[in-house]
Amino acid sequence: MKIRTFVFFVILAIVAALAAFNWQTFTTPTELWLGVTTVYAPLGVVMLGLMGLLTVFFLTFIIYLQSSVLLEARRHAKELQVNRELADQAEASRFTELRHFIETEMQNVVRQDSETRTAMLARLDRLEASVGANIDQTGNSLAAQIGEVEDRLERDGKVAVKIVE
Image 1: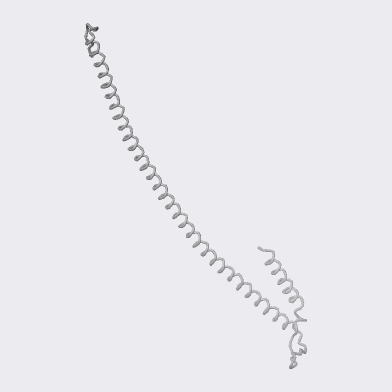
Image 2 (image 1 turned 60 degrees about the horizontal axis):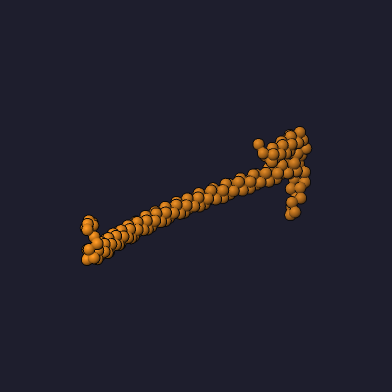
């Protein structure tokens, strides 16, 4: 039990006990001036009635405040839930976008790798053909020079044995 509720019930019990102990005095009729007229009524009962009316008013006010706070809290909870769902959707959207970005980048890397590999293989093929052509050309040149040397030597008669290629 909250301290305020406890204090409220203690004060109510004290007033009830005071009224019960002094009920004779509370019910003794007396002359009451109401501002416009004079009334003959028990002052204690009138004061207890006014205090009871004031208590009912304050209890009604407290119930109204608590219910309005409760409704406001529920409204805030619903708004918070909606905002959470929006944030979750935005986060999921960001993850989807990130996944698409990564997939696109990976496809670009694979494509660039493939293009690089193709270009490198083509270059290697050209280099191989060029090296082969150079070897053939060098072999032909060497054979021609050896043939020329042989022809000179044969003309000069200095070679008795023919060099076999």
